[in-house]
Amino acid sequence: MQTITEKIDQFEAGGQALRDAVANLPDDVMDAKPGPGKWSIRELVIHMADTDAIAIDRMKRVIAEDCPLLIWADETAYMDHLAIASQDVGDALTSFEVGRRQFARVLRTLSSETFERFGIHSRSGKVTLMQLLEMYIWHLDHHLQFLMDKKKNLGY
Ligand code: NI
Image (cartoon, rainbow, N blue to C red; front, side):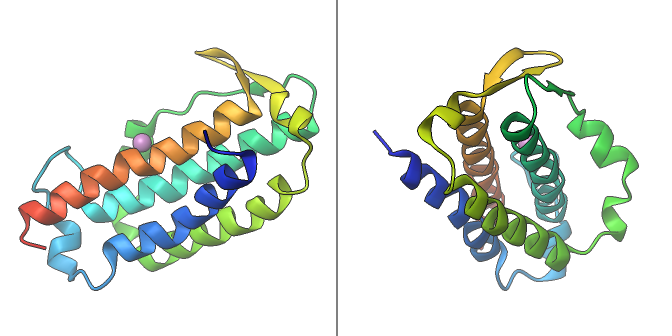
């Protein structure tokens, strides 16, 4: 089983993993929609940055506030309404990477008891800091699998 330190390292390493996954891909590949899943690789990267902004905010609240309410976000509505095509993939990668690097510094200072603190998600109920950390490590792995399969289907 992974230690807390190993989980934090894995969370932080996600920034480089996402960057490596899209390195040197031409624009037409970034925008193609080959499946699996309906998003292009560009949309997927923007989704990762958008979701991590929410993820890190949730974890900050659980650390700093008592039993905070964590509001559900509709990822499809974000994709439909937030001008994804106008956003920059390079900036999304930087935002994702810097956000994780900076927040990993915070996580490394916390006691193991702090990882048992919790918030209340508006749809799924009680969730601990440890569960949130594991969820967002999983979230990147989950989408990286889609990304790799999309690349393979485009001959990359
Ligand atoms: Ni997702």
